[in-house]
Image (cartoon, rainbow, N blue to C red):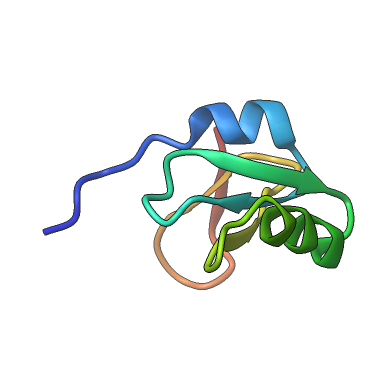
Length: 72
């Protein structure tokens, strides 16, 4: 089983941006409004397989059936 990773700091600091994360998913490599630029920055830093992730602007939790959202 994979260990849970707390990405709360990513949400707080990078709302609405594309971020690249290290393979262990615990460190932000780069961030940008444009996904290609975020990825290019990570590749330029020497990371071969960064994870690209769009950080939502709002922290909405999904609960239950389709269309059921709760804002935390």
